[in-house]
Length: 440
Ligand SMILES: NC(=O)c1ccc[n+]([C@@H]2O[C@H](COP(=O)([O-])OP(=O)(O)OC[C@H]3O[C@@H](n4cnc5c(N)ncnc54)[C@H](O)[C@@H]3O)[C@@H](O)[C@H]2O)c1
Image 1 (cartoon, rainbow, N blue to C red):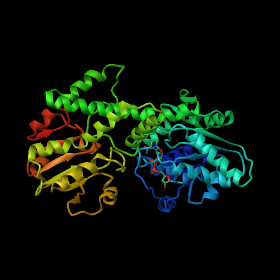
Image 2: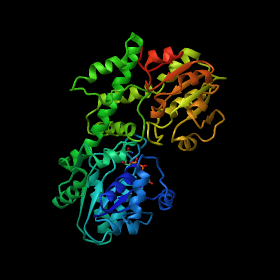
Image 3: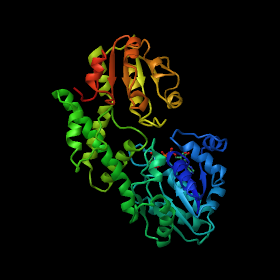
Image 4: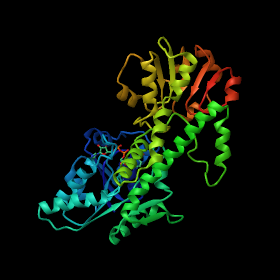
């Protein structure tokens, strides 16, 4: 099939590449010339495991190309996927300007039947707005060309995006046009060879499903974070509690890990946008208001532990920080808890020596080059001469560090672990004072 991917970011680039991988002819469009230049030069503008090889393979095979040329992009695909950003607007609602711009670009240029597929996370009713925008542009040029609009929200996780896309738990299609359903069914057939995972539903339900999924996951995180804080106070161990409840199949093991709060480009904005939708519909989503409030508070928990141990004035102190990305295996720092934690440490006069396996370049872009922040080439270099180690992202390479080596390099044997990476007894035996989230 001929596919145009509009928006070549974390979702569009992965999705477009995976569609090419199974034999489709994919053209990825972006308005950001820098991204397209990097891709056309053989580079990859984001970090996503396995992506670089897959892009190279498909570009070489002539199935994947990148452009900033809107005319070419609209002419290319019978299927036009919209995968542009939907960032939060000032009132918390999803900012739809990029989605609607993409729709208008199609309406202004299309000359034959097309299926427009909303892949971005968009509020209920967006497919109607996309349809209206395209119809308006067609009418403005007196063109009468039929088209279909479908919703196909994306559930991939950054850091495991290719695996998620190639082997999805489910593929949600919201559509009422039989031809569109048929085309999307055929497009996704190679991704569900062992059994059918396609859920076809009405457009509004598909749009709501994406928000419901992210809101549920964010709720589990905030719930566990609050319980971990309570466990801290009561002298209970949240890890034991996690095992005690995760073993109940109604609860399950996933997404029960306490930490320093959720971040990233999706949960924060989607929780806000769903609340906004609820408010507009006259159905206040009270649980989600609490989820968000708990998450904001959680981002200070680690610094609270630091100041409880070392005092509120941290001037003259240096902290080694391991992990800057909002989660492992990505360079994405959008809404990352590290941003709040580092800013808090700096405000209290501390210096930070940070290490992250892939997002230090992104961190330089985010923080600039302030005098309180420097970067280390290795985790060990970061701890050398620091007053304490602060762990913010649970990268695999931090799982089994050289504890004696760290002890020898740190000024004091202090670890503040925002991701509960270690067994407290083991770390204590290694001679450290260990502060984690809800651990005894
Ligand atoms: N990142 C994730 O893990 C993830 C997962 C599922 C769903 N989503 C949703 O997918 C959507 C995209 O997210 P993302 O993380 O890929 O965003 P992103 O910011 O990485 O990429 C969006 C891209 O769209 C481009 N763009 C904007 N307007 C355009 C236009 N008119 N024409 C062409 N390109 C345009 C931007 O330049 C940018 O490169 C969002 O709605 C997001 O909520 C994201």
